[in-house]
Amino acid sequence: MSEAEFKEWLAQHLPQLSPQPKRQSRYALGLAYYHAQSLWPVVELLVGDDAPQWEWLAAEVSACWIHVGRHYKKLCPTTAYFRQGLAVFQTKFWDYYRQLLGYKGCPNPKATERLRAEFEQLCVGKVKTGYTELDKRIAQTYAQREQLLTVLVHPELPLHNNASELGARQGVRKRDVSFGPRTERGKTAWDSLQTLAETSPKDTVSFVKYQFQGIRHFNT
Image (cartoon, rainbow, N blue to C red; front, side):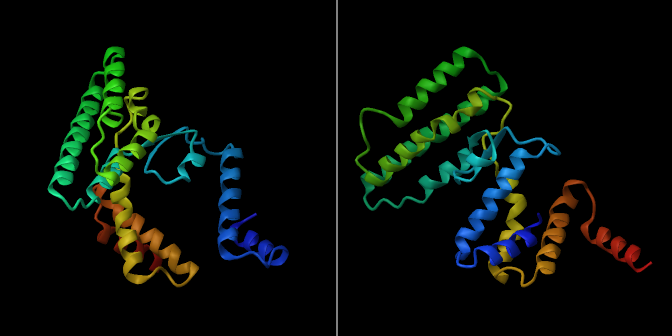
């Protein structure tokens, strides 16, 4: 059943559903199909932000350190004492991140145990900062410890997904300015052209020349 057919089925059999449950239904059925199908391999391990939907998409999720670090940049302490506490923690946070980068190049059991212990000390020290918002954020970081420390089990993984984020940024910016496409054909055109615009430079292909070649081929 295609998405259009499913929408028609919902409209016929469950017309009372509001838009949000309809979207959730489509999402749930899409996930069920994805895990049941055998045409494409199901992703076993995914690097992503802390969005909850990733937990259903892959069997195991590794958290993006850059996304977690951005939460600390959003804090706005009002006193010099709290600003200093935040600065100290951020320094320790990124120092630990750099240790993980070094670990990726030379993983070994001894370093694994040391880094796990240092993460505990970073997030669960006996002395709290006294800055409530910072302490809450540190506790949330600690709650993500399994996802953040996946690299200790899979050192081949990247510590962030910024490359994927940057690839999608152009589309997000256009959506913010234009408030989204107006039709299904417009959405298809957006996706096709923006994908080509982002992929062409990575393959050392001129996007403009590629487009002109496509137009000439279409006209002939």
